[in-house]
Amino acid sequence: MSYYDIDSILTDAEKIPCTFQLDIPDLGYLDNNPGQALKSGTKIALPLWLAEMLAIANLGDDIDQDKSFVSFELPAAVGNDVVQALKADPRAVPLRDQSPHFYGLATHMMDLSEEQELGSVLRKTFVTRAAEIALHARKVGGTTGSKGGPAEEASNLGVGGAGEEFLRGLDEWERKLFRKAHDGSKAGKEWMDSVKKR
Amino acid sequence: MTRCATWRPKRKLNLLRSIIRFSPRLSSPVQSQDSAALIRRANIVTPPWLLHPVSLSSIINRETKEDPVAFSPPPPPPSRAIPFRTRHRPALGREQRGCKPRPAVPALLHRRRAGRISTITLARGSRGAARRDDMPAPAGEVRSLMRDLVEVRAAKLRSSTSAFEGFGDGLMSLTGVGAMELAESRGFVLGVVDGVGKIGASAEATRREGEEAGGRRDDDEESDEDMGI
Image (cartoon, rainbow over all chains, first blue to last red; front, side, top):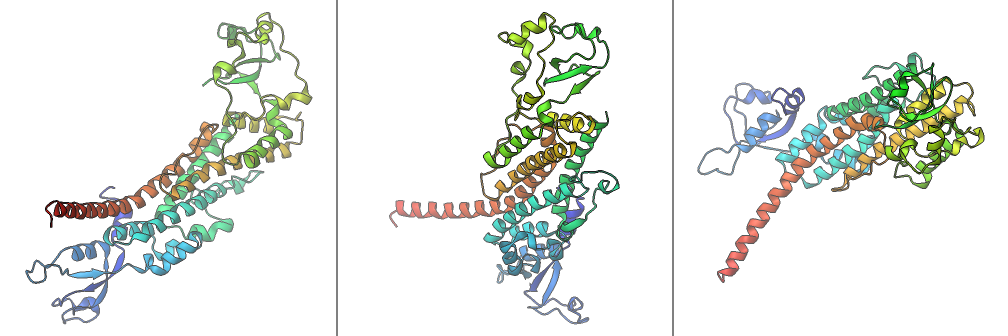
């Protein structure tokens, strides 16, 4: 993954709920309490990159060696409710509403936490939704339309018809997949048309 | 790869005789069997079975009902596909002597080589369906059957990714899949493999860590036992 990968940067900027483990002077403004110390036990949403560093680093104190600055929980996007909904029907959950970088966030959280179940649920979700995405990618742009004409000339990212709701709920990984699948069938169709004209 | 096609010269092609060794004198509109790769200046005639609803329906039936998993078998390899290279075919002698090929009976045409399809023939078929007027069936019917066939095969290729749900099930026979179909689905399938790999990488790392930790503990216990503790 490139250092300048914009999706990776945006995934790192996603906020996750953290609980501070100790009092920190003059940081009260983070909790709408300027001029005061940030109390231990305060819950604040921190960006993933910062939360990761604070959670892994320990205090360097002889007494509190196992204690870190913050402890974090799973964000709502990959919380229990969402996982249960994905188990029931992966296609019915609009992942983009949970997080535009759902899979990026989820895989990152899998690295940090020891959630065993999340991996298998994510894998099943991705594969099931991928089949649906490929179906829509083939349909969009009127590949199945018979007569030709302006309706067939859809843009590369155009959406329409019954699957609009589903396509709106795709996260970034899935959008990329959609684009790849659509480019493939579009190129195939163009080649077929060029054969016909020759 | 060379494929066999029936073609019809657009005009008198004496020059081609140097390339096509076994062909008789070519004058329009004689039909002859030759390698499709050599022929750029001729009209390739769509195989009649490809434009016949009966053979098309039988292929669709086989793809959907008889064997919903595998694809229809591909055309035979070139050595068998080009008749003038096989020595024991009687047609060779006829062609060499300059005889015209046997007349084709329209009623039986759809039986010839039916079922052995490739994407090239599908493309050829759709071109034929677009141009020909003397089709044995209404063009709309043939076109819709052909579209059905293309969609059925594309759906099969897409469904191959559902095997990634479990571990170690990613195998699928691609025998009979055309290069064009493969090219169409390549980006998508690679994208799915990539995504599943990324998701699996962290799960795999966690599992390995757990195994290593477990293994270390076992070693400790064994060494404890060795020492009689």
